[in-house]
Amino acid sequence: MGFKCGIVGLPNVGKSTLFNALTNSSKAQSGNFPFCTIEPNVGVVPVIDARLDKLFKISNSKKKIYASITFVDIAGLVKGASNGEGLGNKFLSHIREVDAIIHLVRCFDSSDIQNVNPNVDPIRDLEIVETELKLADLDSIQKRLDKKNNKNLNLKEIEILKTAQDLINNDKNLNEIRKLFDQKTIEKSGLLTLKPKMYVCNVDEKSIVKGNKYSDKILEMDHSENTIIISVEIENQINLLEEDDKRNFMKLIGIKETGLNSLITKGYKLLKLETFFTSGPEESRAWTIKQNSLAPIAAGKIHSDFEKGFIRAETISYNDFVENEGWLNCKNKGKMRLEGKDYLVRDGDILNFRFNT
Image (cartoon, rainbow, N blue to C red):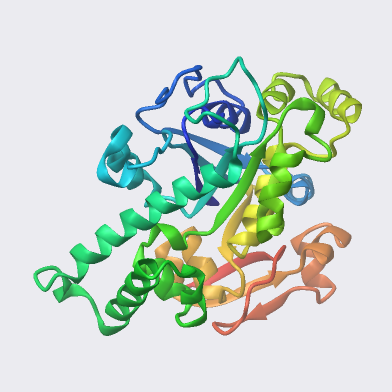
């Protein structure tokens, strides 16, 4: 498995169209009216990796299994969602289940597509959604800190909730929490406002390469590292084409990669993820883990018994595996290493685990 992304934003900004483009499907209903999506649509997309393609050929495997990303198309949030406006409470609960949030903002003018606000203002739209997430967090924090409910919380968990509550009440930046608590504690807190975010500016076709005055506003907010500029409609058109036509069309309009590839690249970087591989006659497979994961943790991604009974990992770097054409030559030439429990798995490692049951 890879990671799970929730697509959020105001109604009618193109979330369902983006979902369809990313998953290459027409699974999500798309319409020119608010709250077109009620129940969240879920799509799983393979992370195409050229390295796995090579391993598959070298090992002459029967199966090839890519890592994957799950996209969740969450219905449009509106002002007052944290109080149930627009069926917001239900939709906010879906956001809690994702690893990262894709915040889609409207960055185009159109009289043909209905807008829930009188004008296009991506900063205002962004603030509306983020305010609702804060208010939802505040409500959750207050309930969890109630003496009746906090019996199962440890001191660290109580501390982070009180810190978040103070920051929200005083309208301060919640990212200050990242300086005070480790990532594991932050993730365990379940706070919506602390979930990693990517920002997708949905522009018109003429703005797809350089953006426009609306997307510039998002970039000026110091979100440039995690911001992607795409035209959702163009992405949808691209995914309807065959591979050769797709490449020619992308070259014609001046884009080097699809929105999906951009999201995958930024998503892995944002969540600090990397890939290791297993490869043999039966299958070649990509596995997603956190950066700096120890070998037993990586083994546990395959099966919990592998982690519990971990002995050591037979390890070959990707370059060595390719240059020496597989396991046997790598063993014969001394390119395979035996690594123990303290080994930090590197991106691209090909691993075979030894374990006791």
